[in-house]
Length: 386
Image (tube, rainbow, N blue to C red; front, side):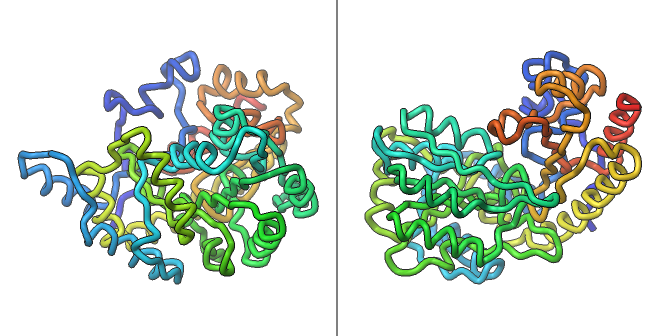
């Protein structure tokens, strides 16, 4: 029904992933398996809706109408059992701008912001850009699976922390946090009056056998939780630049609205709203097929590495289309490891050290390409390692 094996050329489309290869890796011929978008065609319903909207020749200033709100509210309820009120929703130009805005609006220079490395690099840069105190609460790798360090999280909270940036599901390690783990995080936040910014942009990309739980569904009255959601990862719409924050607390919501208003940012445009609505209304079957395809790719990659390249140990993702690779047994420095993949293998992956010191010796592989291309990439690594 949906052809995820189709190879679609993205060169010449101003694709960051493909047309940015020379600037990023120093050579334009690497196979790019890095930045978190997919090499798959978007759901047909999205393309059809965009083409229909383009038939109207005026693309002026645009409002989010009832249909846009209802599509998000219905999706969150149908997929996650989360009943969201319309007043809680704040549309934003993306999750990363939202993280920056939260650090700016909700903390002061002497206050700490907790991040849990190895983690998506903007978590670090958002703290540094605003001169806040960075408090690291590293995840623990135990028996091939990452765990939260709740005891050390409490120690961070005691050091003047105001905000916790939670990645759920986690990028890059692929953990889908269990309800008991999330409840424990909320317990710490409650004791120390922490605001929790929960980045749930990968919430819809969960492998069979696992279930995402929105942090806010476990919160008690008075808990301060901001949830970032978006169809951008789920339906490959990142270039359209639209996400939403769900903020039940009216005071926190006002601060976030004011942060964007001060910059007079135009968040909405006709095409982002059209794609957003169509994806949430008609994209569930496509997403389900995607996750089956990604599961098979994930399992094929793990099997290949175990059989042929045992020095590279995959951390099996429970969610996201990203795989965290433990390459420490190769015995290379971080720079040498990055250069090995680029210069020797001709592959562009994300270097682990960019996710914090806890990522040293690791690489992040984007699985969201036709499986034939992923397997070809592994064969090149095998040839180089051998």
